[in-house]
Image (cartoon, rainbow, N blue to C red; front, side):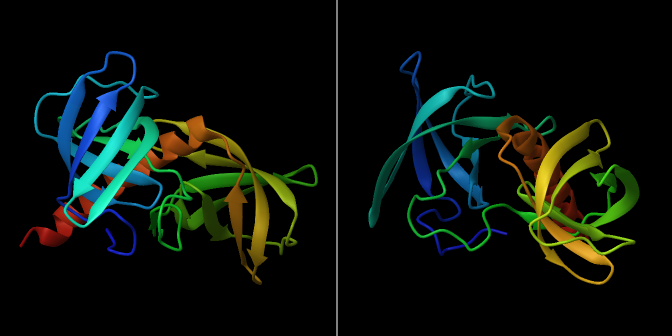
Length: 198
């Protein structure tokens, strides 16, 4: 899940400064998902989604400071939260977002048709799904994803098509993208716990 291709490595110490109050918190990186860093603070941190922060990485061989914000907080993750990493920051992974093989009920709307289907794999940036009828690359469609506690409706552009499947990229709607990223991160944690349990 995490990667050494970017400037961030697991367990690296970072400092986060709340822009509004000036309070500083130190924490360790738990995972690097390209556009998101999962942080475990050393002390209790009072943070809220959307809160502007400044992040500083001060490792012996790395020094980096950037403006960011809190993306989301995991409901079951005490004192863990995610911060946004600008995609142009350092050498990043090829994928911008964590991608998981998760089957979700979804529908897409195209040419005044509504088609019910399922996802094959999904990230906060796009989805690969089954299509009964071939779509066209470059075509704009609307997607409705059914998560356990939310339904997300978002526009997308078709990137690649196969006979019975298509891959699309979501439009940049950060509120919906963060909501989806939070769900996928919880799925990823659950999957890792299941794999590590004997």
